[in-house]
Image (cartoon, rainbow, N blue to C red):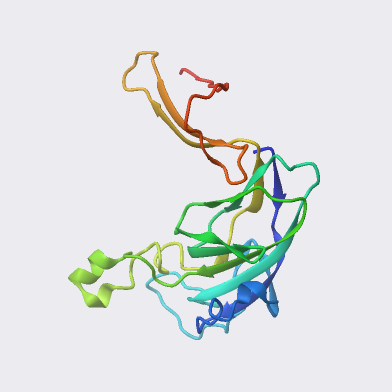
Length: 229
């Protein structure tokens, strides 16, 4: 990474409990409310204070499960025409859909790890970024428990209140990362105590508008530091 464009601060915001946003193209409209990120719907008190209580697990004071929309703009500096960019989000929770300048960039899912989404090259100047985050139950998390007991379907710890709780938002870093080249995959195989190490990597060809993997031989330099203890 050569540099990053920070995205923390004030975002436009809207709750979407009725799943209207994509159908009504909220990614192309102004959102009525605001929220600070990093943060969550609960921390910003965007839903009513809960009236319930429990001694069995953690709970949110202002719980929300469903879709929520976040939007803001960012500026790409001049002189960076040969760069390409990633969106990096630490600790979103659930499904993340992203639109850049009105174009659907993609979707990703995470319950604990960072989301890193390839953007490609960007022209200097201002760009709009919209995220729709959905922290409802998704995929097959908890299916094994449900097969044993239908009453136990809401205790899969990564999606419920039993450990980390279920938030909507991004509670870690938010940034646009800039690079001229990037290693997409690096596998290091050291199968014995011998000094021989086998390294395999995939790297992007940054000369393309949308970076692709190198398909032939390519001469470059990889610096590896090994500390023996």
